[in-house]
Amino acid sequence: MSINVLFVCLGNICRSPTAHGVFQQRVIDHQLTDFIRVDSAGTSGWHIGNAPDPRSSRAAANRGFDLSAQRARQVTASDFEKFHYVLAMDSANLSELELIKPTGYQGVLDLFLRFGQQSHVDQSIDEKNLEVPDPYYGEGDGFETVLNLVERASDGLLQYMIQQHALGR
Ligand code: 4NP
Image 1 (tube, rainbow, N blue to C red):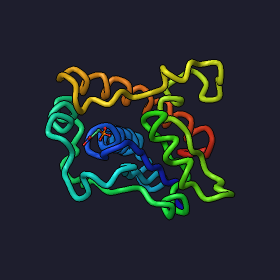
Image 2: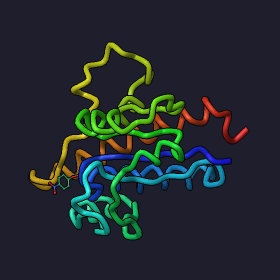
Image 3: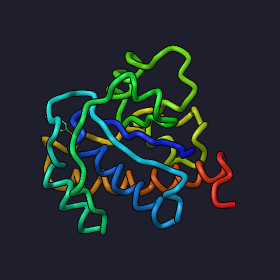
Image 4: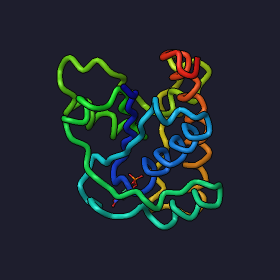
Protein backbone atom coordinates (compact mmCIF):
# COMPACT_ATOMS: atom_id res chain seq x y z
CA MET A 1 0.00 0.00 0.00
CA SER A 2 1.27 3.44 -0.86
CA ILE A 3 1.28 6.65 1.13
CA ASN A 4 -0.80 9.21 -0.73
CA VAL A 5 -0.07 12.95 -0.70
CA LEU A 6 -2.49 15.63 -1.93
CA PHE A 7 -1.38 19.24 -2.45
CA VAL A 8 -4.16 21.83 -2.35
CA CYS A 9 -4.40 25.50 -3.37
CA LEU A 10 -7.26 27.71 -4.59
CA GLY A 11 -7.29 27.23 -8.37
CA ASN A 12 -5.15 24.10 -8.82
CA ILE A 13 -3.40 25.81 -11.73
CA CYS A 14 -0.40 27.53 -10.06
CA ARG A 15 0.84 26.53 -6.60
CA SER A 16 -0.45 22.99 -6.03
CA PRO A 17 0.46 21.79 -9.55
CA THR A 18 3.97 23.12 -8.89
CA ALA A 19 4.13 21.23 -5.58
CA HIS A 20 2.71 18.14 -7.32
CA GLY A 21 5.34 18.26 -10.07
CA VAL A 22 8.30 19.06 -7.82
CA PHE A 23 7.48 16.53 -5.11
CA GLN A 24 6.73 13.86 -7.75
CA GLN A 25 10.21 14.44 -9.19
CA ARG A 26 11.78 14.12 -5.74
CA VAL A 27 9.94 10.81 -5.28
CA ILE A 28 11.23 9.60 -8.66
CA ASP A 29 14.79 10.72 -7.85
CA HIS A 30 14.69 8.74 -4.59
CA GLN A 31 13.18 5.67 -6.32
CA LEU A 32 10.14 5.81 -4.05
CA THR A 33 7.41 5.71 -6.71
CA ASP A 34 6.17 2.33 -5.41
CA PHE A 35 5.64 3.83 -1.97
CA ILE A 36 4.48 7.42 -2.45
CA ARG A 37 1.64 8.65 -4.72
CA VAL A 38 1.18 12.35 -5.45
CA ASP A 39 -1.82 14.40 -6.60
CA SER A 40 -3.16 17.96 -6.36
CA ALA A 41 -6.53 19.74 -6.27
CA GLY A 42 -8.12 23.16 -5.74
CA THR A 43 -10.61 24.31 -3.14
CA SER A 44 -12.45 26.16 -5.95
CA GLY A 45 -13.91 24.65 -9.10
CA TRP A 46 -12.99 27.65 -11.26
CA HIS A 47 -10.43 25.93 -13.45
CA ILE A 48 -11.63 22.31 -13.52
CA GLY A 49 -10.11 20.45 -16.48
CA ASN A 50 -7.58 23.17 -17.26
CA ALA A 51 -3.85 22.64 -17.68
CA PRO A 52 -1.57 24.51 -15.27
CA ASP A 53 -1.08 28.25 -15.83
CA PRO A 54 1.55 28.67 -18.60
CA ARG A 55 3.58 30.91 -16.29
CA SER A 56 3.81 28.09 -13.71
CA SER A 57 4.57 25.48 -16.39
CA ARG A 58 7.32 27.63 -17.88
CA ALA A 59 8.96 28.45 -14.55
CA ALA A 60 8.82 24.77 -13.54
CA ALA A 61 10.18 23.57 -16.89
CA ASN A 62 13.15 25.93 -16.51
CA ARG A 63 14.08 23.94 -13.41
CA GLY A 64 13.41 20.56 -15.01
CA PHE A 65 9.91 19.89 -13.66
CA ASP A 66 7.20 18.77 -16.11
CA LEU A 67 3.64 19.89 -15.26
CA SER A 68 2.17 19.18 -18.72
CA ALA A 69 0.15 16.07 -17.83
CA GLN A 70 -1.73 17.77 -15.00
CA ARG A 71 -5.37 18.93 -15.16
CA ALA A 72 -7.17 20.92 -12.48
CA ARG A 73 -9.80 19.33 -10.27
CA GLN A 74 -11.68 20.35 -7.13
CA VAL A 75 -10.96 18.75 -3.77
CA THR A 76 -13.80 16.71 -2.21
CA ALA A 77 -14.49 15.18 1.20
CA SER A 78 -13.76 11.74 -0.28
CA ASP A 79 -10.15 12.82 -0.85
CA PHE A 80 -9.69 12.41 2.90
CA GLU A 81 -10.42 8.69 2.49
CA LYS A 82 -7.62 8.31 -0.05
CA PHE A 83 -4.91 10.72 1.08
CA HIS A 84 -2.75 10.29 4.16
CA TYR A 85 -1.32 13.79 3.77
CA VAL A 86 -3.46 16.75 2.67
CA LEU A 87 -1.17 19.77 2.46
CA ALA A 88 -2.46 23.31 1.94
CA MET A 89 -0.55 26.14 0.29
CA ASP A 90 -2.00 28.90 2.50
CA SER A 91 -4.21 29.43 5.55
CA ALA A 92 -7.33 30.13 3.49
CA ASN A 93 -6.92 26.77 1.72
CA LEU A 94 -6.38 25.11 5.10
CA SER A 95 -9.57 26.67 6.53
CA GLU A 96 -11.58 25.40 3.55
CA LEU A 97 -10.15 21.93 4.02
CA GLU A 98 -10.94 21.94 7.76
CA LEU A 99 -14.59 22.58 6.80
CA ILE A 100 -14.88 19.47 4.62
CA LYS A 101 -12.56 17.19 6.61
CA PRO A 102 -14.57 14.20 7.90
CA THR A 103 -14.53 13.78 11.67
CA GLY A 104 -12.05 11.13 12.69
CA TYR A 105 -9.63 11.78 9.81
CA GLN A 106 -6.44 9.98 10.83
CA GLY A 107 -4.06 11.57 8.35
CA VAL A 108 -2.08 14.80 8.31
CA LEU A 109 -3.91 18.02 7.36
CA ASP A 110 -1.49 20.93 7.57
CA LEU A 111 0.29 23.74 5.75
CA PHE A 112 2.81 22.33 3.27
CA LEU A 113 5.53 24.78 4.31
CA ARG A 114 5.58 23.40 7.83
CA PHE A 115 7.73 20.68 6.28
CA GLY A 116 10.25 23.23 5.01
CA GLN A 117 11.26 24.02 8.59
CA GLN A 118 13.82 22.31 10.77
CA SER A 119 11.10 20.56 12.69
CA HIS A 120 7.59 20.25 11.29
CA VAL A 121 6.23 20.30 14.84
CA ASP A 122 7.85 23.60 15.86
CA GLN A 123 4.65 25.49 16.68
CA SER A 124 6.58 28.64 17.59
CA ILE A 125 7.05 29.46 13.91
CA ASP A 126 5.00 32.41 12.66
CA GLU A 127 2.12 31.01 10.61
CA LYS A 128 2.47 33.88 8.11
CA ASN A 129 5.84 32.53 7.02
CA LEU A 130 4.26 29.19 6.25
CA GLU A 131 2.20 30.37 3.30
CA VAL A 132 3.00 29.99 -0.39
CA PRO A 133 1.90 33.40 -1.76
CA ASP A 134 -0.66 33.27 -4.58
CA PRO A 135 1.26 34.30 -7.74
CA TYR A 136 -1.80 34.48 -10.05
CA TYR A 137 -2.34 38.26 -10.10
CA GLY A 138 1.23 39.30 -9.42
CA GLU A 139 4.34 39.90 -11.48
CA GLY A 140 6.48 37.13 -12.92
CA ASP A 141 8.85 36.61 -10.02
CA GLY A 142 5.99 35.31 -7.87
CA PHE A 143 6.32 32.06 -9.76
CA GLU A 144 10.02 31.81 -8.86
CA THR A 145 9.13 32.42 -5.21
CA VAL A 146 6.60 29.58 -5.40
CA LEU A 147 9.27 27.25 -6.79
CA ASN A 148 11.83 28.27 -4.15
CA LEU A 149 9.41 27.59 -1.31
CA VAL A 150 8.06 24.41 -2.85
CA GLU A 151 11.48 22.91 -3.58
CA ARG A 152 12.58 23.44 0.01
CA ALA A 153 9.40 22.10 1.57
CA SER A 154 9.49 19.09 -0.79
CA ASP A 155 12.92 18.16 0.52
CA GLY A 156 11.68 18.50 4.10
CA LEU A 157 8.52 16.51 3.44
CA LEU A 158 10.40 13.69 1.75
CA GLN A 159 12.92 13.41 4.59
CA TYR A 160 10.05 13.45 7.10
CA MET A 161 8.19 10.70 5.25
CA ILE A 162 11.31 8.55 4.82
CA GLN A 163 11.86 8.69 8.59
CA GLN A 164 8.24 8.46 9.66
CA HIS A 165 7.39 5.51 7.41
CA ALA A 166 10.84 3.87 7.36
CA LEU A 167 10.97 4.07 3.56
CA GLY A 168 13.93 2.79 1.56
CA ARG A 169 15.20 0.49 4.30
P1 4NP B 1 -3.51 28.83 -7.41
O1 4NP B 1 -3.62 30.30 -8.04
O2 4NP B 1 -4.50 28.78 -6.27
O3 4NP B 1 -2.10 28.74 -6.95
O4 4NP B 1 -3.83 27.85 -8.52
C1 4NP B 1 -4.81 30.87 -8.47
C2 4NP B 1 -5.31 30.54 -9.72
C3 4NP B 1 -6.46 31.14 -10.17
C4 4NP B 1 -7.10 32.08 -9.38
C5 4NP B 1 -6.60 32.39 -8.13
C6 4NP B 1 -5.46 31.78 -7.68
N1 4NP B 1 -8.27 32.71 -9.86
O5 4NP B 1 -8.75 33.68 -9.21
O6 4NP B 1 -8.82 32.33 -10.92
